[in-house]
Length: 371
Image 1 (tube, one colour):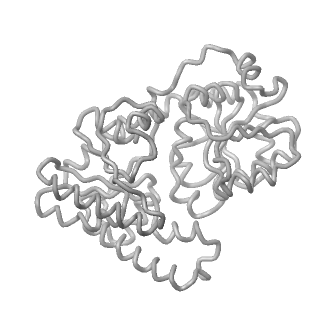
Image 2: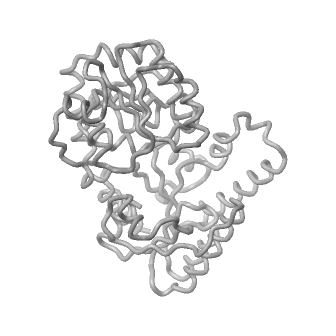
């Protein structure tokens, strides 16, 4: 949505989406975005994930072919769509495929032991690998969000000049000025006044490191952790809550979509945190949008030391901690001098200006026009 919004400021953009469960007006309000682009959604949703994917693919391909003379660029993160639509290059269209991680990594993320995936999944992996290979070969340009992914693609035989690197971004327009001070905000949000507060915003997937934060919380009573995210009934949220049972220094806020309320929590906190663990996805292919939002907030950032994160975070704009190290994490939270943390936060606010969605859209479109 943010990328479409940025592109829509200077180009005519139509987003083809799966069936929406809200009106288009509600969607724009949910993301707090102006209507700079159009949305056309599929008419129905099928219960089967794979059938729904195939139906949407048919919907997207049909709509693209019917409006062939109305656009110049097709931009997708769907490998099947990129593969099927790549022949449109013969008609002068530019087909752009944005890929964040290899399909094998995506399957490994879903299956703890890749070698033990059952036969049907192995067949699906082989099929998706062939589709991905075709999409990478057929696309006019490939967009990646980490330098590591770019290097991986070059090793796979993709020409370097075909690959456009630009990380995820932040919408600076959504950074509100919160008038209340920290004390008032903590009272309003029912957070403790006399403890350090560490704020996590995001998904509760195992590789995100929220389970690790619970273990940190068990070892210190001087710090209060606010975990924002998760949907009621979701198994990841249930898992983390189960591990945190009985801990009084953790607050679960649930999912909060209102950016103004999010930023009240950001201002009330002493630190924001990215506690990602040592796994292939976090180490090589993750460019968390929350990283950029944290940097824009002005609240000091603590992050684990992982190669993909290090492409953006450094010792001047963040407090870097070895991954999955409880002692070092507690030391970073409780022993970092306030003046040091403040200096790093100020640098982060300057650095993040390089990574706005507008700059991302402008850079990618400029690179696309070269091919």
